[in-house]
Length: 315
Image (cartoon, rainbow, N blue to C red):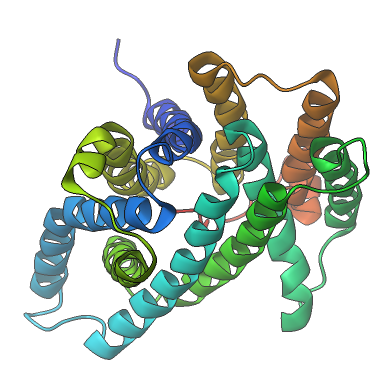
C-alpha cells in the first residue's frame, strides 16, 4: 500500500525523534570509553562528512537554477555556519559534561526545555510570547523541580549543566532561524558540524589524551551519534518537513525526550522514579503548550486555513 506524502513525512519525523532520543544513550555509553571532547570531535566530524555529498548536490542544483552563479554570498554561508557551530559547540559540550552525572532520560527532557526557552528569549527581540507559553513555563518549572531536586533540595551538577545546554540550544535555534532563509540548511548544518568538531578537537588535545584503542572501543556510540544522529536524522528532518504541517512536525520531534527515557530504561536499565516520571509528564506538557499558536488554533477551530510557516528544528 502506497503511503500518502503527509503520512510518510510524519513517520519520518517520528523516526528522526527516535534517533535523536536514543542518541542520549549513545552519548552516555560513549563516556565510558573516551572524554567528552574526544566524543564530540569524532562524532561531529563524522556528521559533517556524511552531509558533504548532500551539500555538493544542493550547491550544484542551486547553481544550475541560478545561471551558474552561487545564489547566496559565500560570506553569508560561512558566517552563519560559524555562528551556528560555535553555539552548537558550547551546547553540546555542556550536554556531554552533564550527561556524565545524570541519566539519558533526564538529560533528554531537560534539553527539550529549549522549546520553552526560545519564546522567552523572544522578549529581548520585542516578541511577546502567548499566554500558553507562560503556562508552559510554570509547568516546566514544576517538572524540573520533580526531575532534578534531590532530598536535600539541591540540584546535581549534571542536571545544571544540561539545563545550561538547553539555554545554549535556544540561542542556537535563534541563529538558525536568522540564517536559514538566507542559505541552504544542509550546508549550514555541515559547516556547523565541522566548526564544532574542530573546536572540540582543540580542547581534546589540551585536556584529554585519547588513545586509538579507546576510540576503537567507543566506535559504536560515536558512529551512531555522528552518522545517524547528526547526518541521517538531520536529513530526514529536512525531507519530512516538506510534506507535513509545521505544528505537527514540532510535536512529533518533541517525542525525542520520550524516546530518551525509553532508551535509557530499555538499554541501560535506568528507569525513572515515580516522582521523576511525573516531572517528565509536566515538562512534556510544557513543551506541547509552548508550540501551540493561539491564533492558529482559533483559525483551525473555526475551520479557517492559514499558510504554513517554516519550522526550525534541533540539528
